[in-house]
Length: 174
Image 1 (cartoon, rainbow, N blue to C red):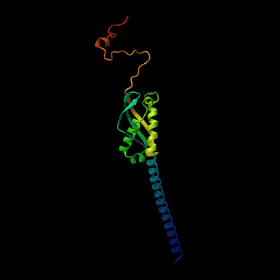
Image 2 (image 1 turned 120 degrees about the vertical axis):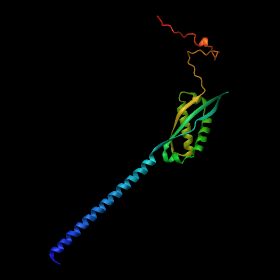
Image 3 (image 1 turned 135 degrees about the vertical axis):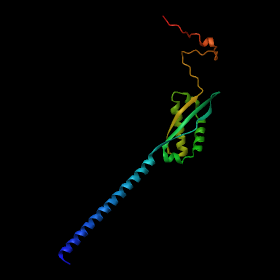
Image 4 (image 1 turned 30 degrees about the vertical axis):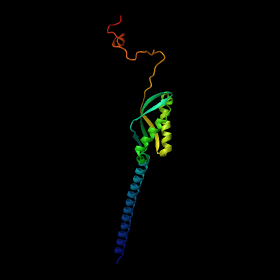
């Protein structure tokens, strides 16, 4: 073998080593990017917030000698993976029983919504774990009649048409 052939084979071996190193580096980079992407997707899905709306809950609560009807629509918020594990029929029944045991006077007070949210959230966490992070009320209907101090409560709850149109007129004031 001549000296020229020896140099050419060394150059070929060096270029083969360089191309192998570059190829391996590219493959490691692709694998690293794929691993980071998979890790990111798993971590995002674990912390993604989800919401579940329950069917409206209609119950009758007693307050003293009177019975009052209450209708509540509840939405639960938490991590999607935790909410998906729940049996929604059991959650629905549990929330209905919890609402049945609420104090009507507290519901009718100024902070009634917060009272319902706190009691339902606390009882759900005790029963089903910490996966439920929040409780929202989409609607709350009660049969409470609110009168202001200036209004006079009349005996006649069904006024006639004449009484309704008594102060109604089409003329312009001068």
